Length: 178
Image (cartoon, rainbow, N blue to C red):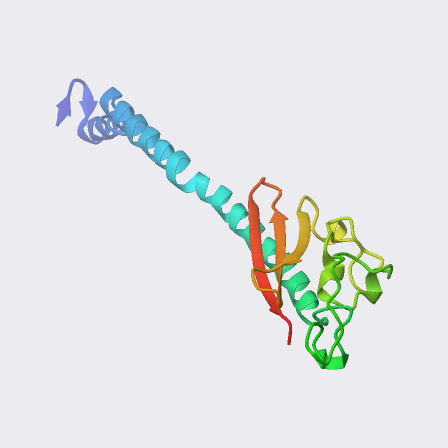
């Protein structure tokens, strides 16, 4: 049996070949679906990478502040405190507490009381090291202040860390005279 002068098997092959392409409507719908997917990716998923970087910077800022606070916390309350804090400065058996905040002429490795850390920053040397904080935490800023607390027997330790993205995070601790 022949149709249009072609055998039946050739006619079936030619009809299948015509149906293998896309119609214009199918192409337009495909492009529309693709454009919606791209919009969703750019507006939802890609900004997540920025948030992940900010989270990583916050974690590193917390590590930096935590290490500095742990170091400070292990020191005596005051230059005039006795060994182990006994007798406490300002007590009836002790001497008066110092009123000068900042290093007492010692170098970085000899800081022995809390207020020596007043003024520590990212360009300061790390404890027992030739490296600076800025070497291990590039792009971060660090500022430590030690001030008298609200009570006469306390000192407020403030560690302010700035991330490379410009976020400023403040950590506070109160050290008591005991």
